[in-house]
Amino acid sequence: MLYKCLIVDDESLARELIETHLSQLDIFKIVASCSSALEAHKILQVETIDLMFLDIEMPVLKGTDFFKNLKHKPKVIFTTAYRDYALEGFELNAVDYLLKPITFQRFFKAIEKFIDTSKSSIEATENSKLKDSYIFVQSNMKSIKVFYDDITYIESIKDYIKIHLQDSSLIIKHGLTAFQEKLDARFLRVHRSYVVNSTKISAFTKQDIEIGKVEVPIGDFYKANAMKQLKNYE
Image 1 (cartoon, helix red, strand yellow):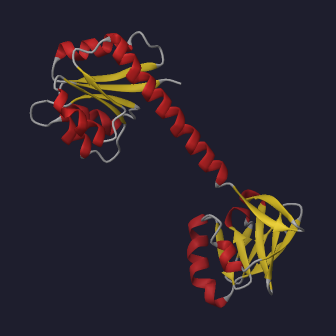
Image 2: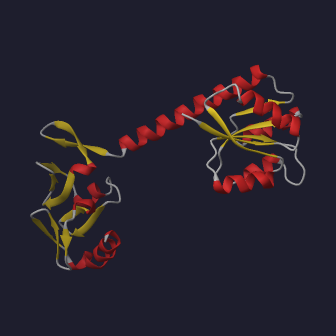
Image 3: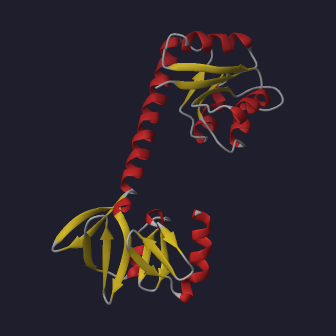
């Protein structure tokens, strides 16, 4: 993986030192090196930055004030010649805080923190996506994993629901409304007895929805919202 970096410091020698340190690490690419927060802001409008080295004490706009006001914040390592700013830097959830002049040994330690943090964020995102792709349901004394993408539609049968899958079905004791709340936005309530997976719809009219060879009725109470949502899928 290649990490994109932005260096922001009003001192040219300080920027050059960070550039030299980064040149020894082949997984980092310097997108730009700026002398002010205003220049950096222009770069951030057009580039995705993974890590920003940001000097705190700069003319016109301090690095910490600039970072506070960013809507989309990259990971940041603050740099400064003043120890007094350390607390303020960490309060902004900085990866690290480097005191000038920055030795390579201390710089590398900060880089390792960034890599560890990035790996943790990626793993958390992947786990979240995986978790959001399925649900466990209780059927025949078992907890069965059901992937949302395999569900075609769900049918209410008194105190039970029937989950229709691509090649099979499951019947569990559950309320339809409560079960729908566990699903994501692709699932659409079209009738008091039916919830459909909008990605599985092959055709629809104002009266019903076709999912393969199955026709699911659209109830009068749900018609207006169903039509509004279905039009978005066209």
